[in-house]
Length: 346
Picture 1 (spheres, rainbow, N blue to C red):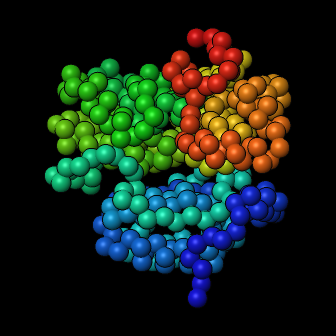
Picture 2: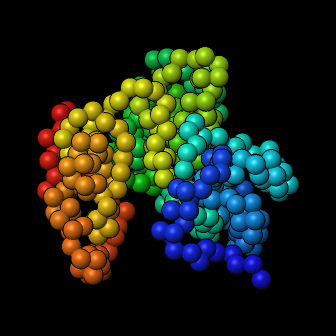
Picture 3: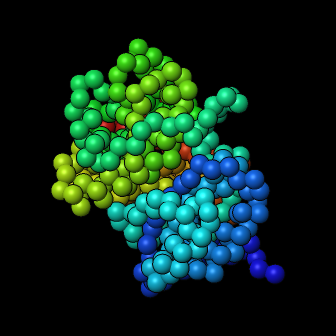
């Protein structure tokens, strides 16, 4: 019987990924569709994709599928044939990454309650009743309309390093939090065009459905998100209205969409826009660190964390046991990153 989950230590898998000499294609796709038996569907996907050498992260729920994966380029056509053989996924849009690189080191296919955690507990909400898609060209045109509000439906650490010009960027940590914040902020703008965007389209698509559910009529979302926009403006020689980099949730952490650097190192304040995780696993905070500070702090967020990484392994393990790892992200002016220089220029 085939194993339907990974049994190899993730450190070994990461090293294998870094050392492999295999050309890979990184893609993402999603589809809101009723899946009656998510676990059976999950097991079938895992078995098929592991045979092809697929790596990445996929969530299955009764409301659909959300995938960010890396495929050996030699197996890409076979992968697409298998995927499109699934009736509800036939022809689903595949967002190809702007930069491929070493994006994932393991295959994870998980069953979740929802493919995007939204906190919505309303049986009358219909996630399929979405706003209108806009192509990159249509998006640029709509952005120029003075009767338009552009909303970034991503978390604060994503928009900090890259966003569309003039976008509303709520200071939030989660999508479920942002839905309510955006509804409140836009309450007086129901007569305006509301343009929503995210990384690959899945969050802003659900967000437009939520806004329509709340009485907004002129709601639009960027087809394929920032990923597709970046490819389309280049292919069609369009003006790029996105500033900075596009944050992605894999080993790369970002794809460069424009050469402009709009963020700063969270330690020294120098212009820089690439995130990293503190190597002290008891901290593991996500923050922006320039090469100079990376060398000075030895890939840590502070002197305290650097000192911890110099301790014997057993002492480090005890510290981690006493302080479980959370999904920590640095929030300038709000999140107390420990003993870090935060003299960041505004």
